[in-house]
Image 1 (tube, one colour):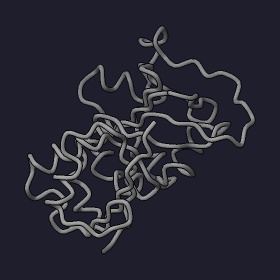
Image 2 (cartoon, rainbow, N blue to C red; image 1 turned 135 degrees about the vertical axis):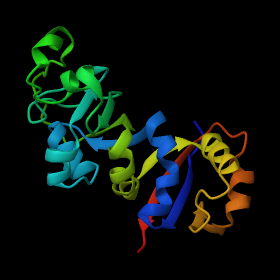
Image 3 (cartoon, helix red, strand yellow; image 1 turned 135 degrees about the horizontal axis):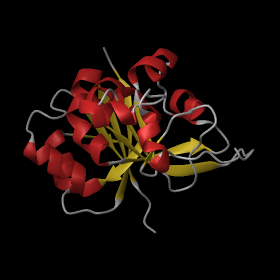
Image 4 (spheres, rainbow, N blue to C red; image 1 turned 30 degrees about the vertical axis):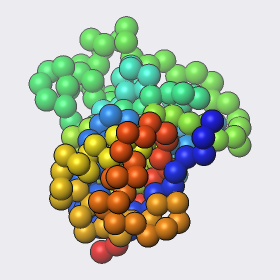
Length: 198
């Protein structure tokens, strides 16, 4: 397996918002096993406790809505999706601890015993609506993996994306144009880490 490229992005949270499409499609992130979802969100992904309690209103784990983030946890290869409030009655039903959540009992994620482990595991993280806008920078500051060619496609499609950022590919300073050229048509993984600037 090829060694992933490494990309450091020095940019403001506002500039990083241009990468929200990647967050909707899925970011590969590394988390510590044996942690509740609440611990994963705050300790591994860097989200503030208030954000988790008040802003992250909808959580799907492996395609099922989650109610209890203190007992539920991710497993190797899990897909974790986070969103704020979703529209309509269906959106309200999918929210954590929804008063009408009884209507989705058959699809609600069932927590299992939390294994004690110091190992790290990989999951796919997806961020939607206000959570993508508000939390992407914190997640990227912890590091995430994307497909190289997909980032190049995003840069080609949006000339303003990362236009104000300082970029380093595999430890070497690179222009935005040269970055897109280097990654274009490349399906290898890209380890991306953001360094937040004012």
